[in-house]
Image (cartoon, rainbow, N blue to C red; front, side, top):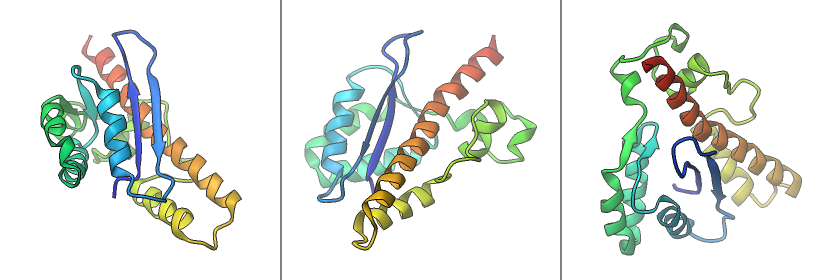
Length: 175
């Protein structure tokens, strides 16, 4: 289920990336709000970099089928999506610390200084289960809810910012 979005926008080469994050409050279907935000933020041109783009595009396609007013928008952006997984999947780049895996959770710490080790939320499954636990469980206290939402933002930020860091590392390697 689409309940959060994390996006860095780089306006032009060399510009500082701007982070945009949204996490659904849990009081209504979040897909419409996320689609509106993404449509506004992604604009009409430029590459959209995703890690495991097939998954990301599948989520957006499913949401745009529920909200058909976004079907044309999805069709327009789909060709702009670049899959950062590809150079690792095809072994065009490999670092021994990846330990044989092309998962973002292995690639990111292998080739950058970023790590998931000290984080409370370290993967997408945990992110989803914690979101559902604190959002829909009435027995969760407000402090726990707030801390989990902070941890979700930190996790999403690392995943998203990590793609920029991976791209920068790859660009240095190519030169």
